[in-house]
Length: 553
Image (cartoon, rainbow, N blue to C red; front, side, top):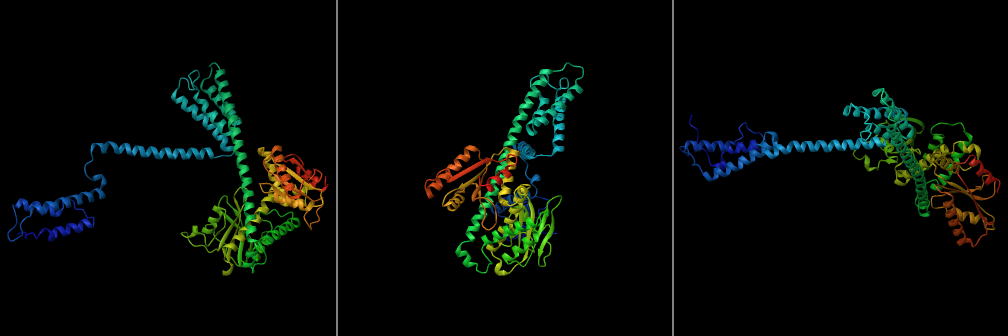
């Protein structure tokens, strides 16, 4: 069959079809472009066919180079392993590069595992298991490396002792001693009948005791810092709520929110009084959220909520929400609701305006507010199903969060107060809770705090005590006694708790307050303004405080 003459290169159908194949990434079995094969055939034929256009070497050369380069690029992209032949340097560098990536990733994984292992604090079973396994591992490695003398006695560094030393650093001298006895038992089993190496075990035991003392000291310091930080965080949260309370209690804000049934300050005072009355009338209510229905009704009334529910949260073994109070018809949200999960994870209120839920699946709730314990774990959750559009404001939702946080703070202080309220039933719950908390920190971690009772025997005694209350602004917490209209016994005084302070720090604290009162009321004698202090942590400390307050001595 006679092949027709080829058209000009720019209108060549082979070129067009080849371009379409390149654009669609359909690479033929032969990597040589069709136009280049056609040009080679024309060269072999010795020129143009009869009746066709002649062969242009310049155009054919340009087209061939361009097509070949494009084809090589496509081959490299589609089959990188089957591309052009690698150079010798590439063949040598590729395994090294792969090995370096694997080593880098392995080092990062090992570093992460080591950090998690160091931060992990297992229970008694885990500690005993580590006490047995770590010395056994080092003895096994030493036996493999030196079967003739696995304990490396008189051979430089005693490698099997690394196990007891690490255990002593991690868990203390007691666990280190148990690991040392395990090492001694391993020596008796692996080297029976030989002379007992006294210096070997004596030196290892001394080093183990030093490591255990070092580890115990630093663990105690870390625990002290953690407890101090937890206490200060709690005080900072309470101070933040007080600042927000002052902001919302401003006259201009009251004017803008005339439809509210009172200021936030009045709501908090009423809530605290209501919970005190409930606690006194229901002393046997040991539920996780005492007075839940009463609390929910109060929030619904104050914040104009139509449907809401209060749940007790259980995190183990799986997340469970147990309803304890409800207002209106509301469907219980599933545990995997995005708003519920976000509120429990962050420990803060989450509502429809939260940007974190923009990409999550939609929730049927308007807001979810968690209740957080002193260990920063959620133990309760309030969800809002429906509320009027005019009440759906950031200020109103923030008020809901403040009221719930005040309720949670009341429950936290009740837990800290414990048996103290039985010693002094009329004591302010905040005083009893913080007194119990600081006493526990002194007993368990050695963090010293002191209690100070201020009295003013002066014609302007009430003004002086009010001035003392205003001067407590550097971490101390103060209470007036007695409160007006409560029928509490005792002469007027101010009870202050000074956390994390020894006798020297309390002297500085007293001098600061004396100077502040002197600048405002003039020079006062020790009889006109007196302060008695005592350390927390002693037996019957709260009973002693009651005697000081009620006996007016």
